[in-house]
Amino acid sequence: MTGNGLKTAELFLGFSRRKLIEQYWPRLRASVELLSNEQIWWRPNSASNSIGNLILHLNGNVRQWLIGSFNQLEDKRNRPAEFKTQSGVGTSELLTQLRETMEEASSVLARLKESDLTAAFEIQGYKVTGLDAVYQVVEHFGLHYGQIVYITKMLRGEDLGFYRELEKTGRA
Image (cartoon, rainbow, N blue to C red; front, top):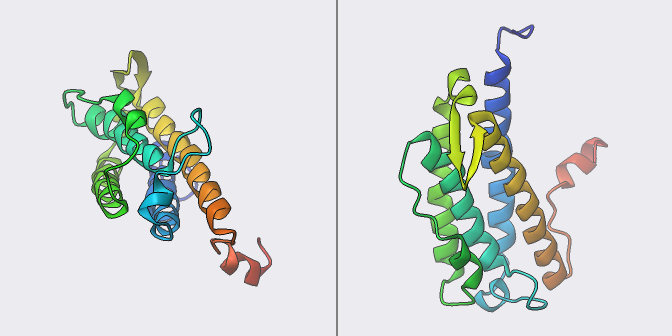
């Protein structure tokens, strides 16, 4: 236990939930809301993904690794389709789907216990623990969130202001 009585598992789960739900998700949403449907599906080249693809991919990843695994649901993810889609899904629909997924993910993270983190899972062909699954989702979401923010800044040519409050305090 730590000094304030919290176990390491509780600290890890709380931190993971805050990163996903209170930092990455709101900033991702704010970035995407600045763009048109055309911009959402723009790709710099055939080897790169659009923001739309990244959102579909994040939705699939969080559902498979976090929601499906810890809720013992059948894995119905079609990962290749996340990257093949090139249009047809609007910004609002993409964000609604991901919002619903993030709400479910938040609920899952809020109820997990240490025993869930040590439990064994097979996800996407990998044998992992629950801790591996949570860490994979947070790390993976952070990676693609960063790509989405970068693409948004590139398309708009402006700072998105996520750290303005820290600049005021000198912590930026």
